[in-house]
Length: 472
Image 1 (cartoon, one colour):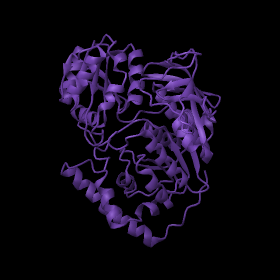
Image 2 (cartoon, rainbow, N blue to C red):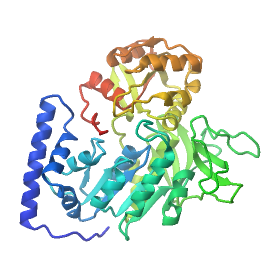
Image 3 (cartoon, rainbow, N blue to C red):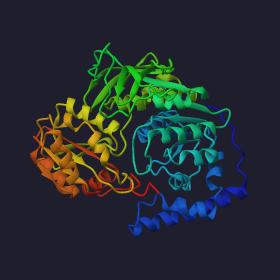
Image 4 (cartoon, rainbow, N blue to C red):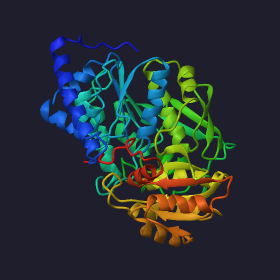
């Protein structure tokens, strides 16, 4: 993983140390005054004082920086890659708080310790084009493009276009890794010679491949986007669909077709929300996370690690000890009940989580908490394109929560089930679910960013693991 970096001259290092100290002080003041989690304000202040701070700190990383961007999976993919790199003995600089705009990325480099050899940065897809010139990553991972935060990104094509712009700005020797199963994303990137990754579900894996609609072609999913060929506008035909709009597709109008990536994870078996077994790089990976979406996160992380020079079996071994991050299949104990927390923020991601919840027999109650603060996106109309119809078939109590709990209740009613409880207060919502959950059951808590923050703060008094002010 050799990578040239400039020598550290005393004067710039001293300047950076002083600027970083000012930023850390601002973060401490922000937390003390309860005006934020202290992950964004310090970066904003540092950018005002010294706009070249980030570029200088990145340049001192001996192994360079890796960026992970896209709609879904940024946090988990970046976290998985960090775990692999740390298992290799590398110190990693990262925006682990999840603050993924410019200020949050800068805040990741304010630590007085400067021993990091490599950076792994999760970056918002809207902020990526402007940040990529400063960071000059040696590798860029693009996860997918889905409908998300409609008040920021009205059309998925606009997001794909921004990712294309960012990829074009990569240094000539940088590596581009992208989801070959995303026809929209791949069509925007394929002429840039990206290294692709894919997921295939074996017939015995228990995965819901939703085959229907003639010639064995999987039907259009309720949580998929309009599937049109970027070249000619004709409808795409899917011959393999893993989730939402991901899979193998081709156009009968002009002959365009997606491809299978260089790195392929085959889903061999799954155990609900608890685990899954993948075959990847001729190795078996027992991933301590369920869900086809996490199979994509895993193959993306392994692809990036191998392209950085890490042996596949070492990367896979590291992932078998992976621990989920805040709100991403995290488990907590509350009132003698096990809680399983999962982030939902758009139809594609929510649909995948719901399918996993419905296949896990341990689930004894479900909380669906939808909020509409800035970090969530103000427009919550996406809940009407989410497959809650599948969720309501569970014979388990349902609780609607979040600042838009009433809207969630209406959506669940139209899906066929009136919630047992509607409760905006996060602690009361979780308590309602735990009280109705069987003693040996598990409470699945599905929430948007802000709703998850509120629930976690109510449960353990900690909201610092995710930046509430991450969207500027």
